[in-house]
Image (cartoon, rainbow, N blue to C red; front, top):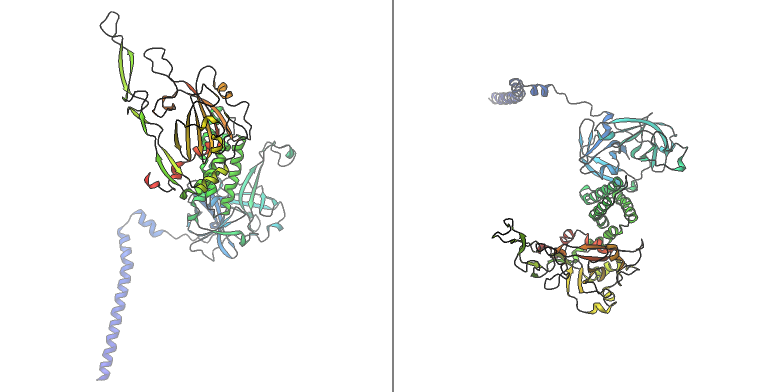
Length: 600
């Protein structure tokens, strides 16, 4: 009995096992045949291609060691090798760090996801690690000692020539060896940067293609291989060594914290390129003025470069190199105020959180042009007038006042951003402003406020009114201490330093040059921090007013009855270069970092 029960038990287990196996097999078969049955039903070309597609077996080819670097703003090269027994990607720092959102791909289109970035402190190199590296993959090997390689050895440069996204080769010879670079005549071009230079025999990496240099005409190179007077233009090409790279020369970089540094370097690169393009030809006066204006617009990058917290030694050195060139050019064209802009702007940017900001505007005064009506009336010839007719010869025409825009009132001075600067910052800024050695209109621009106001008894009286400016105040005085013909004198103070003197006089005989001679004799020396100029004042909106809103300049009597009142004056100005720098600052950007900006 027990034996029968035992046999039945085992028979049941066997049956269950068979049933289970059948089910599993059915499920598996169904999965296999189900997919095939669907494919059979779908006879489209795409389904046939997918069935017949074979995974590329070339993933381990050596050619995959040659890489492309792509970006919206440029192209470059890279390669895979082993350094210190680690599979890594090597390229130039100027390729990977200066490009915006760089992407590394191989010749089969595989995109490498970068995990870590190591930058060289002294060389134009970065070393990258990527996700899911294959430790057994075939890749390039680096030469052990490049210094032992004989000169004239044949080499091959691989890279993305001209950024066309194909790897090409250029052959040449090894011309020279230095501590951190080699020279070759392999004719690599733009786009090859970051690509490897290999020994033709053995295929070992001896350098990373980095830069080329055009030889300018020079009497010292006549008769040598660097003589640029030859038919072929002489270009020298250099690659960076990796065989003697030391671990202590590497620094870890996090790309998410490098965004501002990279952006500052890109802007400085753009400025350098702009300078090179502009001065390829002789400039007209208008072109030079446009260049000067452009420099003030770009001046913000000098401030950002001094205030940014640098993490990459390469990017910092690159910016400093660009800055030296920019400053040298600006000084050669007497645009020192742009350099001053970077110094003063950096102090304000660094201390922005200590300062407060508010919008201020002058109190409203009655418009002098329309007498507060908002409309201006003038006599015009009646088109219907005929001699001996009943029509009047002139009729009145009313228009919205152009001075007050039809409001009848206008502010004594327009709205502006005014900053309250703490004493320590004011003192630091004041120390940066050097007093001029020569005088303009009896004042030393850059001098301390109290000293300059006490210089002449005339200015110890009460001014007509005081207007706040961005970092100080501007005083309006009726008349002038040395010129009785002057209508008013305007003194501009910032950080308790006199930075501007302007004198308004009626324009009578003489031109602008004669006007300048009245307040400054001789030429200003190149080392002086001041500039002077004269300008005609004819715009009714730009006329200085008294505290009741009346123009300080008297109108010229109209020639014809239908003519509008005209004003003609001359403004002679002397100003410190620091004033130009401060008025060129991007004040809204600075204001956003100050206390009280949320109320603007």
